[in-house]
Amino acid sequence: MEERRMTNTMLIFVFLVVLYASIPRTHAADTISTNQILRYNETITSPQETFELGFFSPPNSKNHYVGIWYKKISTGTVVWVANRNTPLTHTSVELTLTLHGVLVIREATTGNVIWSSAISSTKSVFNPIGQLLDTGNFVIYNEGDKTMLVQFCLCMKENNTNHTCHSR
Image 1 (cartoon, rainbow, N blue to C red):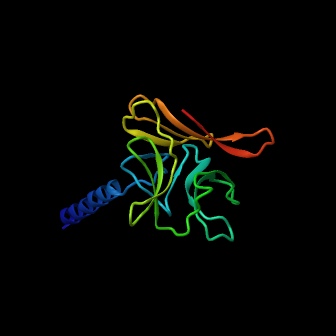
Image 2: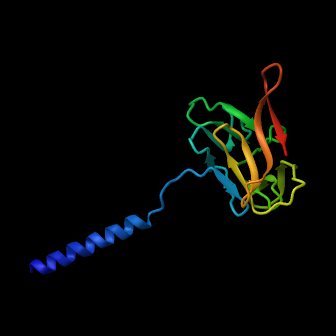
Image 3: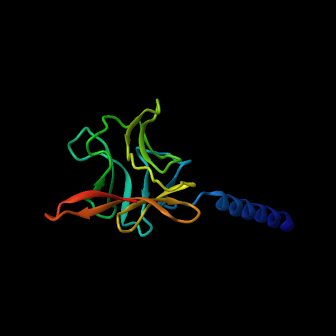
């Protein structure tokens, strides 16, 4: 009888270990690749969790945007907006990175492009990866050699207002 109880206990223990090992760990990704889709309720986070990139809607607005904001500031201070001149009016949208290293917002149902970074590198592109850095910059680079293709960054104009700069 004691041996059977020991066997049952061991089986339960093994089952729990296997179950625990199979549970995916929650880990905030700081990258997006060409085979990934970032949906309206999803974000990527910089390695030190300083910044977050994703879709957002300003308070008291029906419009939606893709942007980068400070993650740990409760007021949601946005530092960069992709589609500032092309606001979205619904949430059935996706953010993707094309094989050519172009950041694109698409209709989720039709695939129609709503906004595009329209900046394609003149360098050859191999497996582009987009990464959100702890500086608040979003860079697109070749996966293998980390050659930077495009950088979207927060820059300061002379009058200290924010604007987007693109570099290649």
